[in-house]
Length: 302
Image 1 (cartoon, rainbow, N blue to C red):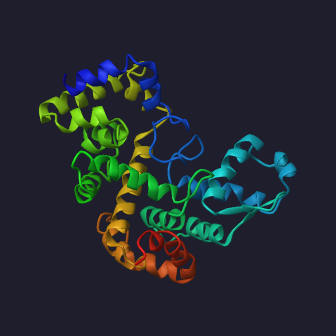
Image 2 (tube, rainbow, N blue to C red):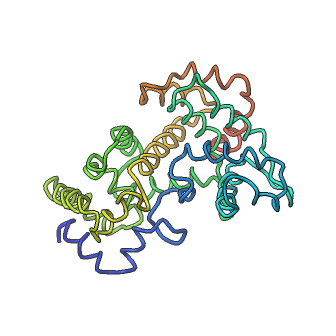
């Protein structure tokens, strides 16, 4: 059975179909738990925190009088709290010191979008949920461990991620191996067949999805998932790629500070200057150092 035949055949299984199409909590349709309607990209944290400014210190019962509805705010605060950008005292939410640093990034007119993205990732790398600490880091390491079973080492994964970190279109995304590896990293049989497939067999699968994606009414699992305004987008998957790349680079360095990471990662992004980022960090360097100390320094302490 070819990988295309396997992919088509598995879609007849309703639970399999829903599992990889849905971005719900119990499904496997996303790599990172923070992805939802209001948080499609990492930068959403800055945008949502900015919208939250008017709620800072305001009693929860008074939120209904604000611009956005209470329901939207309810969903907004969960991720912002998980990122340590806001805290809750039982009646009021308050923007934390780290949250104010995130807003300083948001307000900056000197930083490029990618520089803001890198700084934001450094602040948010200790993102946690009610179910687990180090959620972002563990998601990426889990991906790496799953692929290592199929002899894809971390260095090879980093190379694949770096080659795809600037993807902008659906066709580019669907044509990349990393798209399929991340999408089905929890599906061992798919990975086994895909990795052992010839380039011709892989291309048949990729062309099939590209063709399906041109039909807005397509019921194909992934074509429907990536339809305009669908559950996921090319931009969302781009976050999967870039966050994974950064986490694996930091993990590979096993350093004690951010310097080496910035020096290396900025080589992947022409619009990012590591010296400029360090200059920006200098004003509140202790915040960034504290995040590193409580994440990677714990993972790789001597």
